[in-house]
Amino acid sequence: MSATSAIALPTRSRSRAWKKLRANRAALVGAVVVITFVLLAVLAPILPIADPATTDWGKIRLAPSAEHWLGTDEIGRDLFSRMVWGARASLLAGVVSVLIAVVIGVPFGLVAGYFGGWTDSIIARATDALLAMPFLILAIALAAFLGPSLTNAMIAIGLSAVPIFIRLTRGQVLSVKTEDYVEGARAIGLGNLAIMAVYILPNVIPPILVQATLTVATAIIAEASLSFLGLGQQPPSPSWGSMLNTAKNFLSQAPWMAIWPGAAIFLVVMGFNLMGDGLRDALDPREH
Image 1 (spheres, helix red, strand yellow):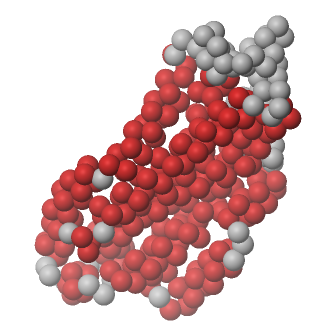
Image 2 (cartoon, rainbow, N blue to C red):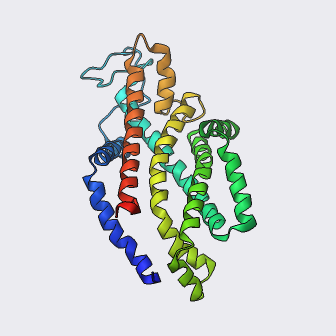
Image 3 (cartoon, rainbow, N blue to C red):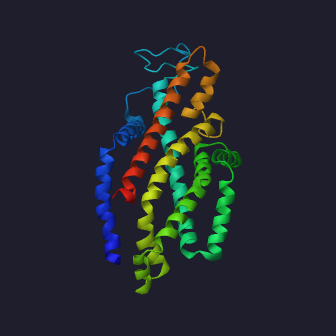
């Protein structure tokens, strides 16, 4: 295969992948769910909803009604408003955490897979050591060390996910670097950096994209867990995890306080997982 055909092939594959993705109903449902929550989060500042921090001691733990669609919490704050603003924290944490993991993990995986030798051994052993620790436990430990805040929670989750992308990228590079077009690029005198950037990285992006989509769902759960433990978004700023932490004290008197944030976490995580599964099927080269 020539270098020219190696670059042109992904263009044709993208067209087939897009058609297959559009035909996947589960992936489309997931995309609709995710886009709905993203729009709510982005438009929160201009939506005609109550201030999520405004308290009303005369409307404590009211059930859902025409005035308060999802009810109120233990100090009279509107739950619908807090759900919308909480979506900003959860989605931001999911996306930013994964970006941190990709930006750090992919270059290390590229270097390890491409150069091999002692470089690969050091990076691979360090990655294995980090993967030996459960993801959420590592995130909790890092968040506790950095201090409670949404920013620190995102950093902790992102760093905890780095080994996943190092291992994935390394494995893909080990497979791609033996292809004929890579050997051809070496034969015409291209440097290692150019080969990695132009010929290897574009061909390992599809599995990284799939993993990133699935990891966003994991990161959202991790952020909710950290906020539930008091290590994420800090009051009075809303977060689905912190809302669940408060709601656990009022399950019998006001169950809606726990139902809505729990349902939101479930729906968003399901949406990203359905999207990730759809992308994996659409980008599978064996199907093209």
